[in-house]
Length: 341
Image 1 (cartoon, rainbow, N blue to C red):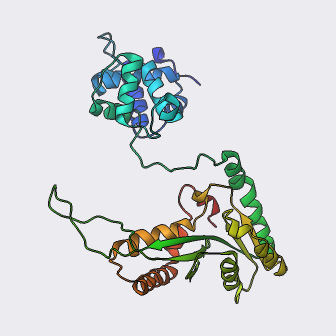
Image 2: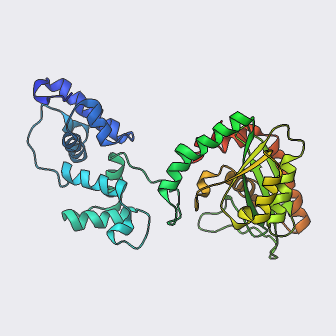
Image 3: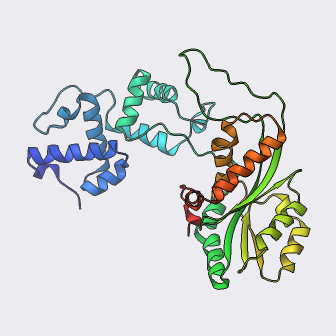
């Protein structure tokens, strides 16, 4: 049902305009605001243009006329759709992330309007857009495969797990190094603080698995994670397991090795291995184990020897095992909540 502004009194129309602009600024899309208020999409963008020209007072339905805005509703619609639906690479920019400077250039080239970067930032905020840290995706990733995994493949794995009373674990491998650091420290303005650490480089490799119920299992290995090491880890998962174990991992050759296939088959239903879509680490909640270890564990410590590193890793992961709420939190990110229990 569309709302005919001509049938509304000035006070009601003014409030409708303000509600629409406020909703967009709060992050709702202009399309959803137009549908909710029963007005044309062009009308919502016209309101946004009026607000940009003169603030809330410009939305007063009593006021008519005045000079036209430099960027009208059609221009704002184009800017919004460009930032939301396109990437800078599609418009021949050399970088993959939108910056105020890029959008500043686009507005000048398309509409002949020169805005400062601060004005561009205000404009984007008024359109309900914000600067955010992006989620990176490999360009080789197949979006259809990811969608199928979330909507079809994993629900089927869950169904099989329920039928067999199986536990589902997501597994992954990682390496930690002595020269990894994270976090910030306070110091004199304009003078970067220096923290001394060892110049030697060493590291250890690990493998872990997490469940949506908050379980964490891990193993440290001296060398790289081979098929034999992966099988050793699977054996540990099976040890004293009172129900079948379903393991989900990426498509690394280690996980697809023939000896791994033979080992899984030999378990006669006690173990099943499933492979995530290619180039899709964001689908694996176990990735957050390494993020937690590196950023909240060893990344904030001065590591001077391999034995100290091993002890620090063990201590952090043992502590994490006692905090199932944090492990369950790894299943609450936008890209992993599909796997939450």
